[in-house]
Length: 67
Image (tube, rainbow, N blue to C red; front, side):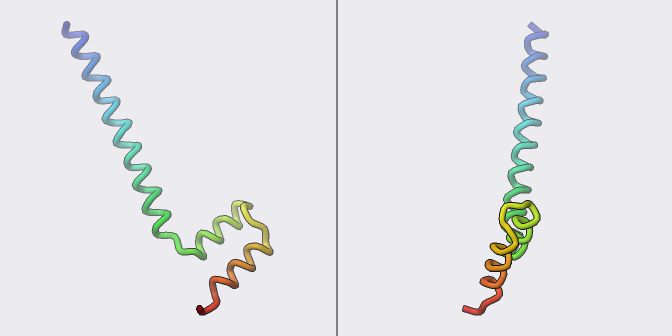
């Protein structure tokens, strides 16, 4: 009986740790995406190879225009 309770306690602790880490990672990703400016996002996408130089320059010039 006490072994079963101990096992359930260990499983509960592991579950709490996993949920806590998951929530921390999601909150961190949400803060980072909100904090990034459009220029920073564009620079990151260009550096990652998601867009080419022409697309980067075209979009960057569009961001610098006053509307």
